Figure 1 (cartoon, one colour):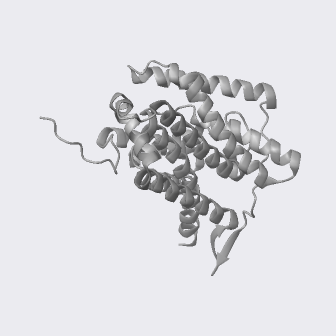
Figure 2: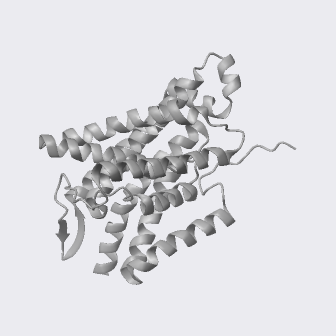
Figure 3: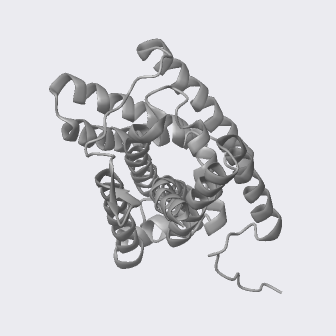
Length: 292
């Protein structure tokens, strides 16, 4: 039972990071109806910038803020310079361009920083509290939960309580009609990409100190897990992304703890296939209106 409780808390902590990254994918989908396969590489790029600033100044929090601000800028630049000129008549075009961005970003990071793994310090202790001999959460785990919870609340308020969130969704679903109604569609798309990249940067800063370390390919496996979480919950549902992230985190931890770490990636891929075959719109997808 002690081992089960430890794995459960560890899985929830890991799942919170997957939830943050899945939220970034949901944001892009809501804003532009695109799955951004370059999200992981973009997050690594901003994490390198953040930790470079932290090393130069000695302040982790300054690097943390710079990384998230860098995500905002990078997301806006990618949308303005690259994705705006992609022919969206076929969903495959955006996917191919995003995969090309992954190769470019990883290549540039390798040239600038090298391909060696670099340790990344966490802002809080990762030593877990123990109650009654049971290992629970660490201070850093609590920080992760707090950060992800704040992002969920802010995004929920943005999309449900503000006119900006409504304009973003309108620009994604019906851009031509939105333009006629005076909605700045281009600006809303840029804002969506910027916010998604910022959330992805936050996820990168939360997960890299735990196990990955800085490396141009550090987020590749994490992206697969986060994509599975987003698909599981539904690409149009922020709540689904959170639930999906927690489920994937628990699955990975249980499988790694009881069957071995080598089996965990296979379990995620099996879960992704099952979801795509049984409920491709996600567990939290809304019922579509009948057209006939």
